[in-house]
Image (cartoon, rainbow, N blue to C red; front, side, top):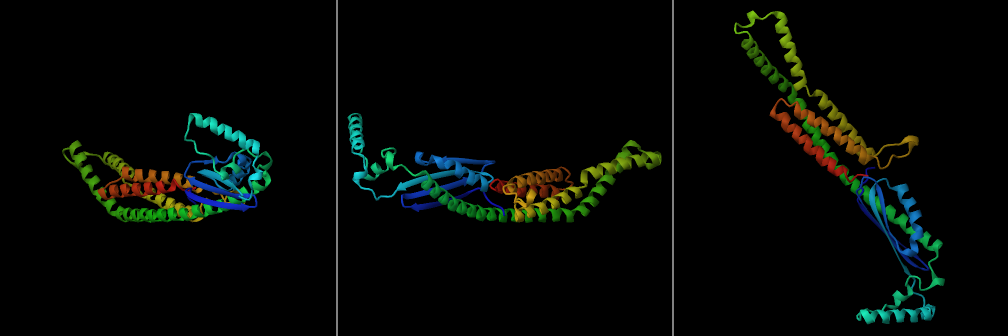
Length: 310
């Protein structure tokens, strides 16, 4: 399964003590980069969250945001009067310098960090709620990655079909290209012989003529034979379709080699681009030159899409 690195997932967990919400935002990256945005009260969940994400994601820049809200079932008697008096004194002192400071709301007082030492978040309860919500958000993120990955794979399949059509056109044009080039080489050879031996072929020995023909034939073979490049392009197209269908394939031990598809595709497109460059350098006609340019354009379009593949 081809998966994109761009997706979003969110979830919430409702418990007796309150509500916890988590958001996962993922964009493309060469490696797996995790960025946590956690409240201080939930810093202890960073390690289990990191383990969960690294076990399920291979690449991408992922931002993890976690927030919580306590249950609003407490009354004023749970607020520490001494703490409230201290807060009021600090507020008055601040207003002497910045007069327009707004007073805190009641809900903010109940959730004020550190104001209730005996009412701190229970690490076990809130940690379990966070992991529960994270698993749901991760599932949503993975589903989004798979949908986007399928769209990217569809676009690359269309480009691959375009590459196959160009290769077929060059293959069909190759016999005529070879014939035209032979005529040009024959004419060039006659001109060379006549220039070197004004009296014509009667003044050149068979050995000399054979050597010149051998030189021209070797030059012809090096410059015009693109069958090998076309064959390799077809082989690369088969590998591309395999990767788009099977993703990263199977790693040792039968486990899915998730996350390798993007890197394999990037390498494959480098090889395809190399063949297109060689095809262009050997071009013996304007048709082959245009075909090489079309190939490079299609390969670049696929390479850009592959940058988002995990």
